[in-house]
Length: 157
Figure 1 (tube, rainbow, N blue to C red):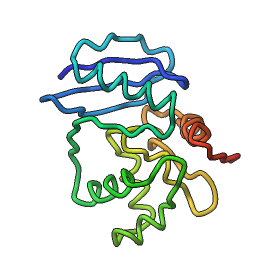
Figure 2 (tube, rainbow, N blue to C red):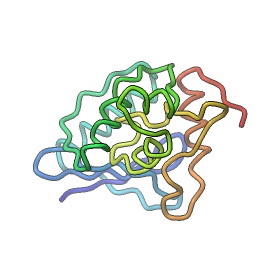
Figure 3 (spheres, rainbow, N blue to C red):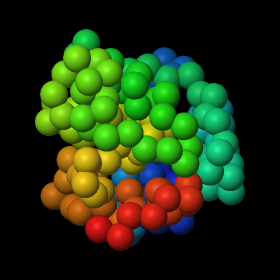
Figure 4 (cartoon, rainbow, N blue to C red):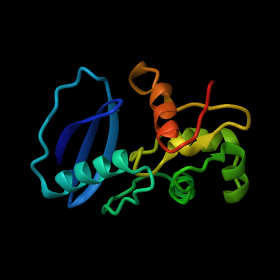
């Protein structure tokens, strides 16, 4: 597996490629050391992520591989369909796929490709909701706020 660590306006992103597919994107602490992308797909992912930061309506076109439960795959597919500048509630996605809002939140927290599969566009019925399942024990909500503001949406919570 090849990986890179890139700089973003809100910190660092880790990118992992395996078998010519993007396998994972992970938010990393801002002190994480940058790691140059040597694999062609990692370089392409870095370029497309940079294009998204220049234009929030940029549409990603990267080969990726998702591994998860049937439920998680349904949730990630629903999330992938949310356009830039729009949001969907956990409850709305739950109704769409025949699930429960809490289960939608759990699948969002396990999304292996945040930003590419825009889980930041999933919000609570009243407010921002969670983000990135507090991975590594860190509060990632400032990144969710940044991404939503980047797409023209404001959440004061």
